[in-house]
Length: 276
Length: 228
Image 1 (cartoon, chains in turn green, purple):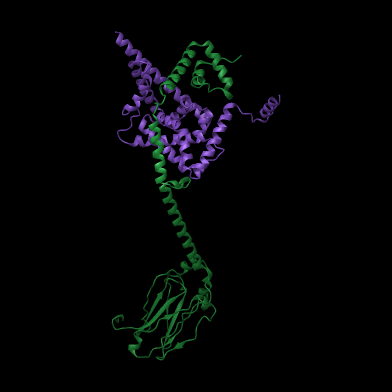
Image 2: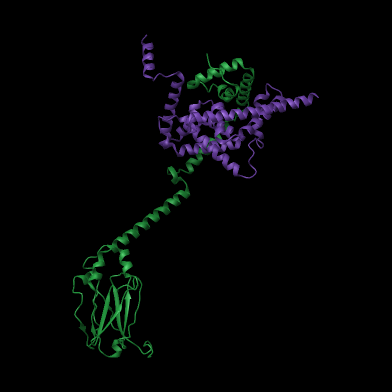
């Protein structure tokens, strides 16, 4: 004997009961509903209404009897389109959408850019080999002592840090024909920073009030002129004419922190600071 | 005796086939063969597939979309998609289920496009005089004009009722009640769970019953008015 169901519970199952959708695994429920309908006139009437509406729906919504010409038209159109446009199968998944393709291309571009930046950063961090780190000699200009020749002296460049590390911290003084002495001195502490990470080096090389990393001394006729060369990554020029009124020293820090170009040029009348 | 023993052994193994299963299996093999040929570039094989299935496809499209022109366009799109994705069909797959799925998807796309088109939201066959004429002609031989008119009105009413259903409920009720698929088959076509499909069907039947009730009340009211 099946447990008696309430009408409200039975009503929920009526739409499925009328089409035998409660069969199979739900056979027990089907039988319970059937037992209820046998004794409940109200629910039985509702079940009959469901059945009638379903029958009406099936009877009325019969598709029209389309003629053969209609179907032949469909076939011919499809075959004509297939012949004219033999397209390969579209890519599966999200790549079917144009926006998704664009997003995919953009993300691929970003990935390549990030990889390039990472490679660049890695190359900068890696110690260059000795051949690449060759000294761009802090060669003294070998011009004549005439003022005309001193107008465009060759650039004096510091050595790379690594190259300097393998050499004494202070090069022997050189002299040109004019009798001027140039000496490049690099503190060994700076050389030790060559293998430190890039951001640490940048921090140290940034212009600050801290102790200078690199000290470039220029001796002229026995007088030492020292200046701080703390600039980084961008060209900078510095004219130190306080101690030597006739020679201007121009330092240019290249984008490579290991290379700095120093020009020693005769000071023109215009560039001289006014006398106090 | 030997046959009975073989049947019993098959039942015990669980691979016993009913005549319906056997028919479906033969149908599946036939379509697998035709698809293989069509995939190799045989146009006649593809045409044979179309001939075999076009009535079914057009019927579903017409029930989902409600008029002849849209049904024809949808059927064409179904076969173009079928051709495009022929290489995705697996021989062990149910071809009809696959075709139903494509058809339902195409009809959904078409309904969305039509919904977005201004002035074309009406589902009912307001512009399909030819379509309305066809069944009228079919039944006019054995029924009078008044009956035909009532029938056409009922159809228009039910088409509108069908249109008010949500997309998934409409697809589920068309496949279950009009195409005669089982709940499990409908669930496979719609890529849903049988319990979800049952719920959708139950909801759709309740709504359609309410529409039918209103239709009957309206008819009774009109008849009562005519009598007065």
